[in-house]
Image (cartoon, rainbow, N blue to C red):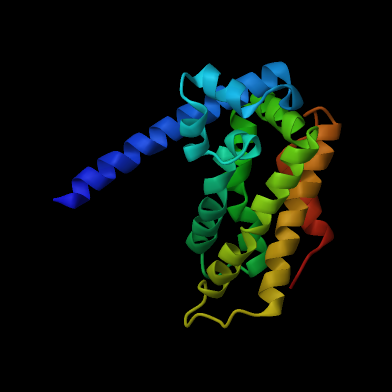
Length: 196
């Protein structure tokens, strides 16, 4: 009997977390990251400071809440790529799952990217979160073959290089004010490091 109750509680918690993240994002985008305190975020969300901190330990984590699931999404997309694809192609194609929101709503994606890249604390926290993706991607790469390959330095380098290609493409896309095609930039970055 604990199963359904636990799932309902988890769903409710995820919904509250999502709502708090949206309130935090909206307020920080309007007022500026440095001008908003955790107490401000809690007040805007209509919860106590301690309640807010139960969901997010920092302002950075509240703004970047959506990034938390991206590592798992990326690893799942990588595992789903055809086994016949080489690792580099599979890594590139799996990144489409992260690029999709940029294609779906470029204006919102540009505003979010500006906020993150223009705020040193957010930029640093996002890079830190991205670093936690590599240990998810490496086993996903290894599991793509039958039998699975051992985890090697080469797989780790490929995963890290793919993430840097993404960051480089995003940097160029941001500098262009979103005028350049992000998918094209990502393809160009991958082509510059073609790995056999």
